[in-house]
Amino acid sequence: MKIKDHTFVVTGAGSGMGKELSYQIAQKGGFVVGIDRNEETLAEVNEYLQPFGGFSGSYVLDIADLNAIKVISARIIETHKTIDGIFNNAGIIQAFKPFNELTEHDIRHVMDVNFYGLIFLTKAFLPTLLSRHEAHIINTSSMGGFLPVPGQTIYGASKAAVKLFTEGLFAELAETKVHVTLILPGAVKTEITSNSGIEIPASATESTYKMLSANEAARQIIEAVERNKYHAYIGRDSWLMNLITRINPLYANRMISKQMKALLKN
Image (cartoon, rainbow, N blue to C red):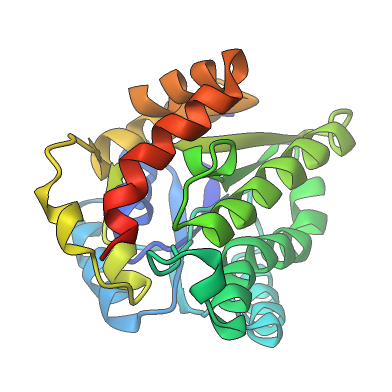
């Protein structure tokens, strides 16, 4: 599905990949309805988009709030009429802790943002998308959704749920004009850690691992959407770890566990 002349809702539009997705959609002649829980960063991104006219609309929304999703999605549909797609990009990570050390609130909040928020936003917009001559749902999972990461077990579970939900939705909508693409990013340089209210372990700052820029990640995502891809592995690390996991899942598990061991000591 081509971006030009289509209107897309982008969640998490106030920073990171959401910011760059918004810019590249606008750059390609599309229109962006931005959603973020942070009003200040939404305003900053609106300024960033000014060469292309800014957001078509921006809405402050915490997608962990089901009632707010119902209100804001209805307002967006009423105001903008033609919504052609949704980039379910918003997400958070958990604290770098073993599962046993997480509180019930920690667990529920990660699931509410990463999984239930995505599901209920998709449900809210799906009738409108089905009415369009062509539409697209783009759901962001993670490399952590197919590769277990110690210290991010609940985050991984939420992203694995997104993966299977998206694959099921693809099958259900196969005979409609609504495309569905699953995005599986590897390590991308964004503000997700600070936006999640998580303190970075000291050992993480010592890493020399090169992360993909948010700009390049957004470029790869947009390309996948315009090619109507089923799965899009964003970054060489995601592509490679998917391959290793398929060939030898136990080896992949032990390899990532060894890499994460230092983080869990902090």
